[in-house]
Image (cartoon, rainbow, N blue to C red):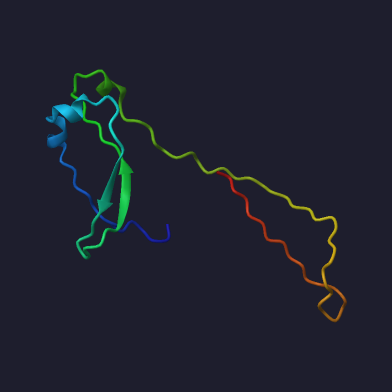
Length: 110
């Protein structure tokens, strides 16, 4: 929303090497890989993708399962109310004998 759909970087993955490699295709659960993202304007990595790759033949049992749904949960709205009944040891700072006290709070919803 703020930065648009600009390309951050690319990574290339040779699927033929994996599909025809007996050692890689014999592993039941594929290992998680960390792949660097590269952009043509710089030699410095633009980030890292954490991923795994599975290549299945069309007639395999797993190929019929379809893609895994990795859609994030929809955003839900909550209302939080904070009530402060009393305060103490707050100095009076202005000429009316009151202080403009404010509260700052953070909620970790993870």
